[in-house]
Image 1: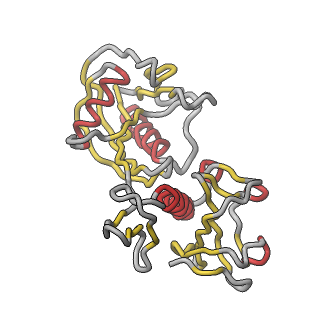
Image 2: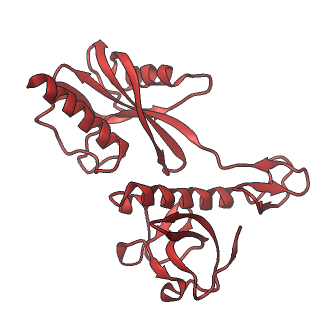
Image 3: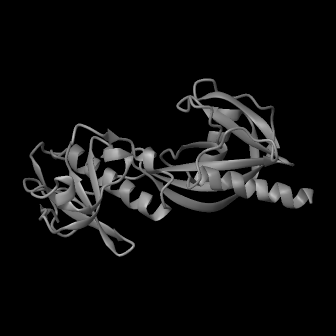
Length: 257
């Protein structure tokens, strides 16, 4: 529930607008509201981190607005809470009006939802499920450079779940579409909330089955098989992609020894 922030309120401050995050000096604000000029703004509590409150303020500070990716190397728990705040801010911004009757909506006082007082529809934040998968072939792992990654980073394959699919079907389809290969022994590993803009990444490991590698040029700049001890630039630590790669490398190394 939103309320006016007082000068004595303190904690971590997620100030977000249009999927951007306020990062003065490149850091997430931490401390008393008064120190950051936040007293008088309207905000809500979205969680706690190391015993301190995490606040969400839906406001555009204009200067020093950046991407959540800038703090991706922070502790996973704090990054997850910040991502939660950015997603909630965007949800509230995009649900000001009811999609059924067009009337203005208001925020629920008891849960993260938008309510229409005219037709009584209730909207909750939408989450887009997607898969991410590390594929192993002997002592090699399949890595690709995505079109959206122009900084040389190579990572594993990923894609959104389509209507009517199981997660395993999504893995098979996405891998075939992006690399032209089939996989086997697909197994679930873990999951990670991914606020870009509102995804839940479900991570898998799989083994190469058959097919000649041919990457989808619309999605990927290139793709290739890389030996576990000779890898290109990888995603940052703390991402589920990096964990999948490191887990695959550990398997390859254990077999090699």
